[in-house]
Image 1 (cartoon, rainbow, N blue to C red):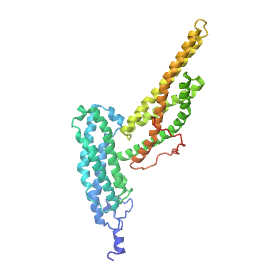
Image 2: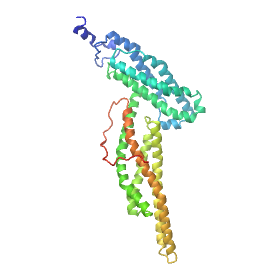
Image 3: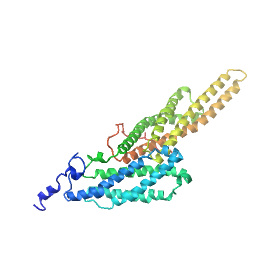
Image 4: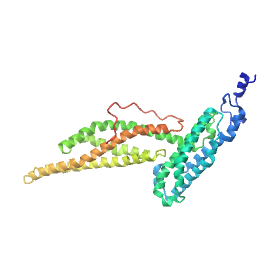
Length: 384
């Protein structure tokens, strides 16, 4: 029955393992308009070479796919290796991958993925690869600082492009995800796992910061108003809650921020912002704690001196002066910490959304964490 149901059934028959070139993990079905010969040519000339090129590039780049902290602080010899590897991968993508994206695919879904990858490569060529060309070959010795910052961006962008392109082409492949293990290198699942680890870490950070934000809103407005209005240090009973909050911020929360900074999937702009807060928050907390303790000891000593008849009036005046001076010194540090927490609270939800969108392949979901929205009025706004 030419052109009828019989021919369509023939076109949609299952390919043999020999024709597919892999073990019979699962049967595949071709679109009605695609013959077995067309699919075999697509595999041999375009699809399989594309996948091999992407995975080969990922393997090369994996040797220098470090965290931004590692790139910024590596030895000069390691920097030379990183620079040479990035240039090599860029040349490989230009010479080998770009021609493999030129031929349209007879399979509509695969052709759409091919076009998407080609557009991404075109953007990469016009931006990142053009910047690579702008550096001299001996850039590690002549432009070390600029090169380190550039590599933080370049390594992440190239890796994301290779990973996302492979995921897109594999997802549109008629063989589906059942044959993905045949193509995946050992490094690829590890990269996906690290991406998921970053996502889970950001979710946990966001969940922890919700409690921090509630404590900030409970403690800081009254504390700032009381210190500014009365111009004296809070009583120990009033200070105890703030002291506990500051110790938690300066130790547990700051340690969590420093741990996240070591992950490889974090971007340079995110690294710089988080590194600033990870460094400033514990310092400000310690300054506040020590200022208060020193001030309280001085005020108590001067108050004791008031009991001495010859020094009573002097001690009283000195106590007022020290109390007012130290409270004035305490106030700007407390306001700076309040502003820092507000900025961080505005950034974390945006960062969480960005990390979620950047995940290339979600082989497994992150652990469940309460993501219910914070009630109206509790979500902090960026400080002015």
